[in-house]
Length: 476
Image (tube, rainbow, N blue to C red; front, side, top):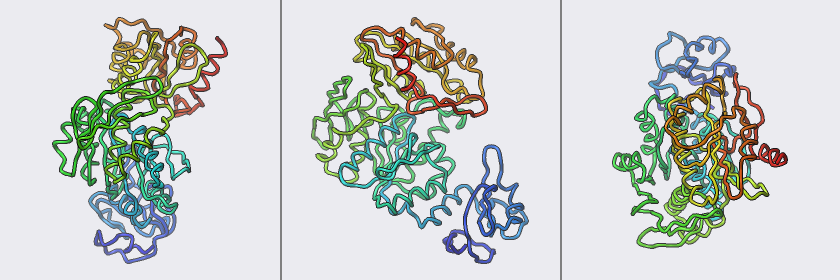
């Protein structure tokens, strides 16, 4: 591609037009004829490698200030401009798809999965970008980030377009918004699920976390907002696009009432446009009422007849690691869930508590090298609903598991709930299984879909809780 075609007249430069054979913001990947964009990361600043990139044959470099080098193109924000270059490189696939973005602390994965399933069942080949995996129709693609980096993101959208997709639904993380990973993507619909404490090790404060999420609603045509959430109420007042409220607790533009929970799923009345329509969601959990409500509302706002949407929802499957029932063949139950924030812990436990006949046993830990302040809060949330706690490890990373557990235990100082500390997570699961009695429900919180554990030095070891439970059951 010619340099000037790639730039699309967005910036004036004295660098002569030339062939560009590739683009990257990683100095290690620069090849002869490539355009190198100097972006600042957490550990490295690409500007430090600009001279070396030119020595290695880069066609030009993009910088945010004058480096005194030949073939430099100066822009205001290199990270943002890189996203625009990536879109241009792939001939703007984001313009050829109906994009639906879902953001919030909890519920993104389930909501996006349900939207994709409904759209697929209603005849739309749909792509999905999310925490667990990326999907192009039925093709499964492994993912490492909730939202891919800019080049990978546009490359993925390009693959979706070429495979015949007309829609793409994606989880949009706060990191992706702040770091401009989605380039110039514009969304037909944006959904806000909720905002609770998470990622403060990155954003610093809840206010900055909220502002990051709010960015999505400056680049969408229509917003669906959870107005049961305090931040959702604020967001609804602050944005100027076409907007609709969602609620499971009262009246709204789209809302649920007469909610009836069961281990096999949930029945409720879906209220919209003055109508009240009975629906069945074959996924247990009170929090999945909102997820399904948001998913159906988004599809209806895309123009799909409500009758088709409701019919499709009735046959949707659950999401791996999201209130997932692990078969035991015993007289007690085991549920695996990704809950790793105070709010998520409270959501899963309060929901399961509603249909637990025996004791509710919660096993959880907290991730290392992450926000320490949420650890005691997670313990308090768990103690609020559980009849017994098993405190263990999660992904300790570079922290000592014992230190993380001590932070968790601070939240149990005033709690009147029995607990056991079993540092090794596998042994903790075995302990919970041995402890379980008739009609008890064990909730394994924190790992969800993950089939690994992250130890010191970023070492990933295989750890699938479904396999661990199967092993533990053989020991009973």
